[in-house]
Length: 87
Image (cartoon, rainbow, N blue to C red):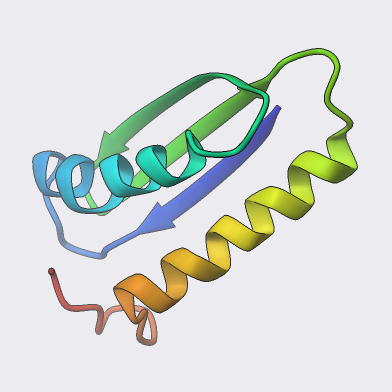
C-alpha cells in the first residue's frame, strides 16, 4: 500500500476532488498491479491510498509511483505552497 497526500490551499473539497484527486487517481490507475485506489478530499487537500496485488514488491510499486509523481509535477506545473493555480 502507498499513501499520497496533495494539497491546494484554500480549495474546497469538490475542487480538490475534481482537479487534484481525480487526475492523480487516473494516472496512478495506470500502474501495473494496482488493485484498489481510494481517496478522501477535504478543504485544501486530498489523501489517496493505492493498494497493490500481493505479487507486487513495495520497492517496484514505489518506483512506479515516483515516476507517476514526476509526471504529475510536470503536468500541473506545481509552484511553491500557497501559489498553485487551479487548472
